[in-house]
Length: 222
Image (cartoon, rainbow, N blue to C red; front, side, top):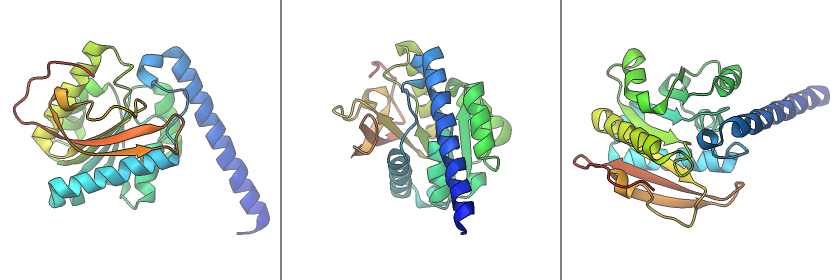
């Protein structure tokens, strides 16, 4: 690539990163409980989420892992979707879900080829039923800040995620900045599968994968 084109690409990339950071700060200031962080996930964290989702989905059901949907829940400006695309996942297998209109605009500008559902995670089954009535789910990769979201809201969303996985298959991958805590969702109807630490992020994070329990009634939040 010629030097001037490299320079133009670098400037465009830098501007894109700065704009994403500005969006994050603005959204955090307006709705800290729904954003949970003042900056988006690092590439290292997003890549670890994707690799753990793939490993766990393959272990649970190789056929579903190969063909099911990969749901980027709480997609924000798209760091997880970017990691999925870099890993070679076809855009039509990715379904991004985002409730913020501002983040949704940024996401669409970055990833026009990836389907985006704008709505609340608590309505996930309804949103999927409209566009993907019978498609199995390989994994839900969640960036929702459950420790910051009000308890009743978080429990309602987790029930929705669990029911989605029971109906469509797949696994849940979740990260938390409370990296010293393990198996945080095991009391919400999920069986822990694997846990990994990611220190190449600000702040460091714990990434965990779960399988939905078929017979469980959530009783206690994180």
